[in-house]
Image 1 (cartoon, rainbow, N blue to C red):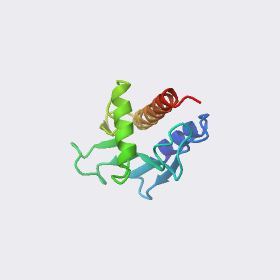
Image 2 (image 1 turned 180 degrees about the horizontal axis):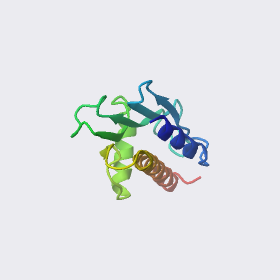
Image 3 (image 1 turned 45 degrees about the vertical axis):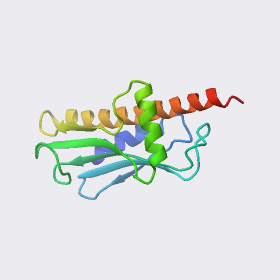
Length: 150
């Protein structure tokens, strides 16, 4: 899954937002990859959340419990329980925008198609999660600006 992680990293680097920068972690065996955003200060426009910690993860069946089949993998978002305000605000805005649950788990089959198509499907799902996270953060910024106009 190194190829998938590298392709996602290239996509994320090409994005314009300088405040939301994701880093990558890949376990040596490739069974777990994580793209994480860890910021120790508030984002411009969302002063109510003083620290951000958010990850988009990939796990194959060798590393994951529960998963429905040994030929599947899962892609999901996580954030520490200690970041309750962030979790609440992301969930609230996701619902307000009519988006799917940001913390859902999406399972994908690893042997359903060619390696290239499987990697592409995983990459696409990671990017969908990133785009939804970004859209949700933008919604929080717009809402904050409406309540606190300068």
